[in-house]
Image 1 (cartoon, helix red, strand yellow):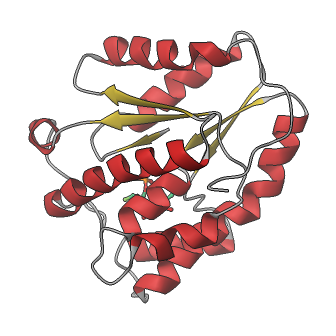
Image 2: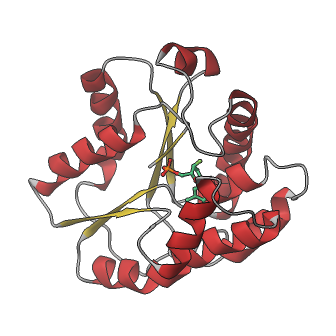
Length: 205
Ligand code: FDM
C-alpha cells in the first residue's frame, strides 16, 4: 500500500487486512518500522530531532526494509499474505523528490527486495488533501514535496511495469468515502484471491 499524505492509507490498509483475514493469515508490516535501531534513527529524522545527509537517510530507509526482507520471504513461503504499509516505491518517490538525489540512484539499494504481487497507490490531489485538514507535523508533510512525490509515483508505475510486468499496479482515487475507497481497493486485489504460486519475484530486476 502506497499513498500520499492524507490519502487515508493507514486506515485503508487496516481495513484491507481485516477483509483478507477472513480467508487467509495476514501479516501487516509498516515501513518505516520505527521500532528497530535503524527505525529509531529514521523516526528521529522525520520528527526533525536529528539531521542526516540525504543519501544517509535514503539508505537507512532501504536498510530498514532489508532487515525485514527475510521475515517477508518466510511469511510468503508459509503461504501467508503480506501487506506492507509503504515499501520501496515510497522510498524512491520521497527521496527522488529532493533535488540532491537522482531517480536511478534512489532505486539502486532496493533492487532485488522481494517484489509485491500488487501495489495499491492511494492517489489524492493536493487540493483534496488540503481540504482534509492540511498537512501534518513531520518533515515531508509539505504541499510542494507532496506534489513532486505524486509525479514521481507515476514514473515509478511505468518503470515497474517494464521491469516487473507481473505486478498489478492499481492507482486508486482516494477522494470518496472510506467505504467507497475500500471497495475500490478490494476490487483491485481480487485477482490475487486464489493465491500465488511459483518463485518469489525480485524488485526491479
Ligand atoms: N518515507 C517512507 C520515505 O521517505 N522513504 C521510505 O522508504 C519510506 C518507507 O516517511 F513521509 C517517508 C514517507 C512519509 C514518512 O511515513 C513516514 P508514514 O507512512 O507517514 O509513517
